[in-house]
Image 1: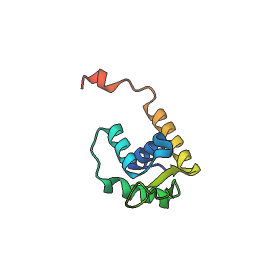
Image 2: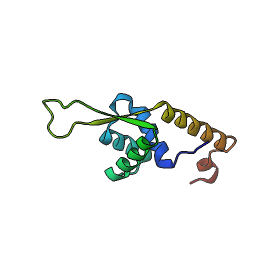
Image 3: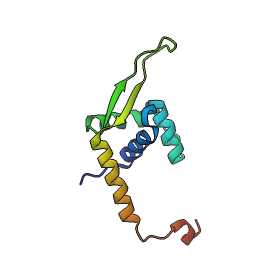
Length: 109
């Protein structure tokens, strides 16, 4: 089984959560919401490109609308392989944490 890096897992999960609204800025905002950490665009776009190269996500260029100027948005969605890897990551986390108490409560941190 090939494991995802933490950033790959975070990005795939953000794309899954956003469904049809998963484009660069929305993904970055979702990641910031999920992690509580501010992210630079480069910290999102470079790993997204690698996920695409690995066949875990695909990109779809939106049609340019007359109301919007600039470049059209690029939307991302999970491929079947990407979803499979995300499911595997969820299972690994479940197995790893099975039987571990709430550490925050136990150690008062």
